[in-house]
Image (cartoon, rainbow, N blue to C red; front, top):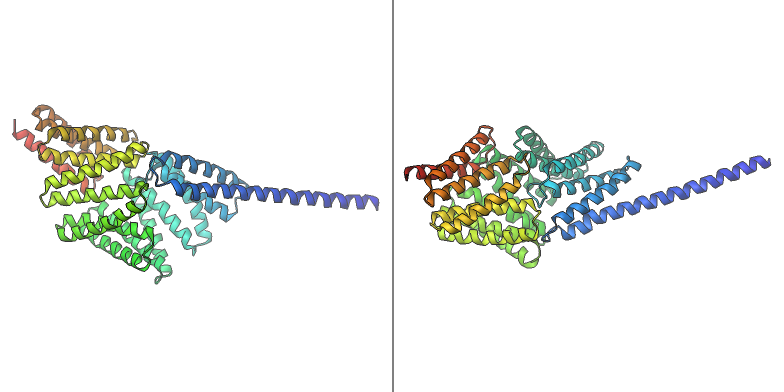
Length: 439
């Protein structure tokens, strides 16, 4: 009897110890989750729009992912932890190399992180197919991966992931078709369709889908006028539609859309003067204004708007030199500004712009998988050849232009050029013809 009693006491004591250990373990797991969530959402979101925040964001996301990774291994069947881990991987990938977001240019690392997020979200989505937040998260990850593959010239993966992202967004829109969230999903789906149409070179489809996206976002903002994200999306959709309206030579429509975008972007920049993304959006408005100036014959106005846009981007880049998207957008505006200065016969200004653009683009070309960077370097080398022609060195100019156009033609045979790339190449061919005829 005594031995039985002693055994019961031992078992009870071990059970108490086990419960305490589980409680401590659960408390620790909860603390890790709270810490990771603080890094992912609170701290990250608080600094993501500040100038110079790109490398700090990467550090925060890396630490959060590692913390959740360790926790995930101990509770592999905890759906809440898995969802948080997927969110951490997605945000880490964004800052590592998402082309349309501030990033460090490490597309290989970004793809690896996106794949981890996708694998987790796929499992969760199979278990909970009606969870619309999961559906949207998976669509976002697939779309960002598609954008990276687009930059790498991987058409198969670009189209496969792009189509899957579109299907997921449209399924979310159909789930509750009369809600505001459904309109948001549908607006994003039309944006995706517009982007795909651009990739395919179908400007008519681009025009129609961008118009639908813009109209939907305007309706969302009208229903929720204090929605800052909706205001951003309206401005973005207006700029996207403005660009294609210019190609159809509907300049009054383009001007109205651009005025709407400027109104919203300037309000954001005024409300949050330290918001780097708002400042960058203002520079996009100025760039689009310059394009409209060119198409309507106002070259001096175009040069002024390009100069203002370039000044904003150079200032942002100086404060965030690791931000590869800023580097890409700054080099782009320098190339455009240089071409206008060349047409205005302002050779010193054109030369400075072309040289700076080429230097930045050679830095971006360090990522050998980035086909977009390869085109951009060739474009800038062609720009420099154009400058040489205008400066009187026709032999060197023709040589630079011929080499640049050969590199661009090699990309074109692989069907890797956008409509805008093809327009730029046509300008360079015209420069070569002019240079050759002026011997």
